[in-house]
Image 1: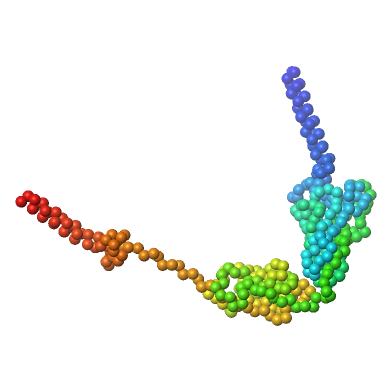
Image 2: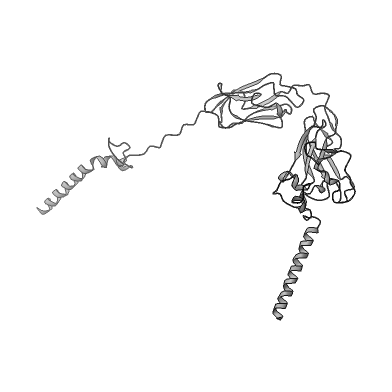
Length: 359
């Protein structure tokens, strides 16, 4: 009886410890205390974000814009990585805020209010890395002072569904396409774009690969043209930049890397063939200035390498120093052809020698 009683006490202690650990887990600062939102009544997370998703506190929208669970202030900032940019340069904006780590969804708008970048994570819940989030846009072409806008996207229940003071910033913007959702928008610091007046200068091509009239070009070449200033990627397509063999256009992909446009053929080019690369005036710089005239250049691919002939070998494997075997000879041409006769002659000589010795 005593053994059973002690066993029961040990079991109760284990249950108590496990229960305590569970409570500590669910009520700790970073725990999934709001996991029921994903499976609860209509209106909770599950209504907008279909299962299966990870039911952790990281997915809760209440992490969005406030500095604490009281939700009585706005804690959201957007900062550019530089104070001044050249026209068309990349502008990186860091959006930061919230009061817990977790997924967020973030957007970046340029000075005209156009969406230029977005960050989303698993199952549409937001960026798995949480705050801070880096978003990128392009500096305007004209010199001046500008401001971009970054936004946290989430559910209006972040106003204070779980108590506390109801508070959102002055730029809360409902999403007309998604009920109960919207964006808390915040302006970046102002930044300048420097330059000597409006850009009215047409871009020029500084170099090409291959060079014009180049020969012996490798079949796997990537055709490029480097400009004097950044190129607008939106103006690059199969009609503004292409490579042809004189009959058909080569199939490939196009890309922009800094000031260089690149054409990568899907398959190697044909050997010993003249190709013509063309960049038309449809290609422009960031300010919209086109090339002054179409650029056309030609190059010739290399002749296919001819494999060397096999090394010569003696048909008689070097026996007797013969390099050429008689017609019909095998690996030892002379022996293969005259071997029988040589053996007969050798036998006759031996027989004569034996008879002579008996005499």
